[in-house]
Amino acid sequence: MTATAQIGVTGLAVMGRNLARNFARSGCTVALHNRTEARTRDLVDAFGHEGAFVPTRSPEEFVAALRPPRCLVVMVKAGGPTDAVIEQFARLVEAGDVIVDGGNAHFEDTRRREAALRERGVHFVGTGISGGEEGALLGPSIMPGGSAEAYRSLGPLLERIAARAPDGAPCTTHLGTDGAGHFVKMVHNGIEYADMQLIAEAYDLLRGVAGLEPAEIAEVFRRWNTGRLDSYLIEITAEVLTHTDARTGRPFVDVVADRAEQKGTGRWTVQTALDLGVPVPGIAQAVFARSQSGHARLRRAAASLPGPGAAEQAPSRMAADEAERFAAQVEQSLYASKVISYAQGWDMLRAGSEAYDWGIDLGSVAAIWRAGCIIRAAFLDRIRGAFTERPDLPTLLADPQFAQELGEAQDAWRGTVAAAARHGVPAPGMSGALAYYDGLRAARLPAALTQAQRDYFGAHTYRRDDREGTFHTRWGGDRTEDRTD
Ligand code: NBP
Image: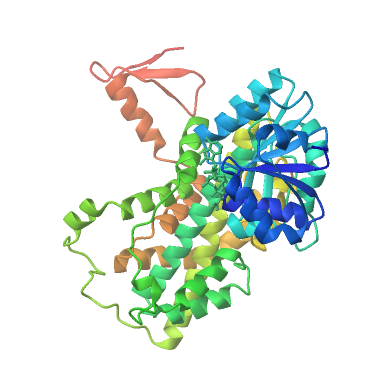
């Protein structure tokens, strides 16, 4: 076999197939391989006319079809299969070649794999790919880690197939060494969880407090999509809310079981945030809200607890102008809460980057999320601007423009959270976001009392604001204070 291909894709299920087609459509010669050969044949039969494909029947043929330094993308099921496939190809490639894992790996697995392959002289690039199967075909947001040297050969190929931001820039960049790419993808998914939860709460408030019907709420979302909330998730929310179920004639959203599932990246984000010591309550609330929705037993047992918004009570409908005002208030709350979630996501990016010494450029992350990925939004350009202007920005909330907007939104935000509580509409994301905002603003937190309690029952000691050192009060004795350091 002559080595003609610039890139190879192994694992030709939905993601790998579409990624391979995207490379071919962008002018690359693409070697193809799949464990079960039929998938390779199917791809060439159906899409062979789209570009230059080199179908291969064995790992050896696949590697032989690639021009050195070889770049091969592994798109197989995450976990054990990824390890097996990497090992298979690591034996066949040469020093300087690049193996890319485009699956949804945990960044710690990527770190482990990268270290093992580096010892053998092979570059391993863990790469987050967002945008689902459509993104893989038409242009995903691509988040590669690995060495800068690997990016020199791989990067130009990724830049050809990545989504384009409105200013024409490709939505990919080298994010940092070893697991940086999969870490950034994980945080992306965590933010996506938070964003979706907040949108769901906005819908629930418009329904449960204002009494609007799904199709009317779709109109509200459509309007919002022309303003600062302009984003893919708001756009598809309006689409979903206008959809009518063909079988029953009811709004589609009313026939879907209200138990949300999760594939695990939200959970990874929260677990990692806890390990890094970064507060990301917006993401955690979203993960727990999904988990709570799925707890049928708990929900059944509590269904008859008293409170407003019980199932049998249809929400009373607001008059049109009142509903309009309420929708404007919810928009402010959704926007403010969204800013808070993104601020937490960026705190996590910074913490990960510092802990693992990745040097992630925080503005670049916003830049490559502007298109191709699920959280793509006009708003990301402003986050890019904030971190480009001030890379050491301690939190997005310290950016003067965002700070001003939060200040302007807060009356509406507090009103929405109060309305949610009064009407019995659960809004953990919005109320948690407001609590986070107030928690950061507070001149003094009740953590002082927590510290005193800890000292009381466990002699954990405390610090004082007026003196250096650590102290313990003899709670069981004469309550005098000892300095303990
Ligand atoms: P799947 O995750 O369903 O994996 C199927 C592929 O893995 C097939 O090509 C299959 O080969 C191959 N495979 C398996 Br399973 N075990 C193997 C083994 N031991 N050795 C060799 N090949 C093996 O495919 P996908 O949905 O296209 O996703 C691919 C990756 O992309 C995953 O890591 C996924 O998490 C990630 N991802 C998916 C999406 C999405 O929207 N689906 C989005 C972003 C990322 P076979 O044909 O011989 O069975």
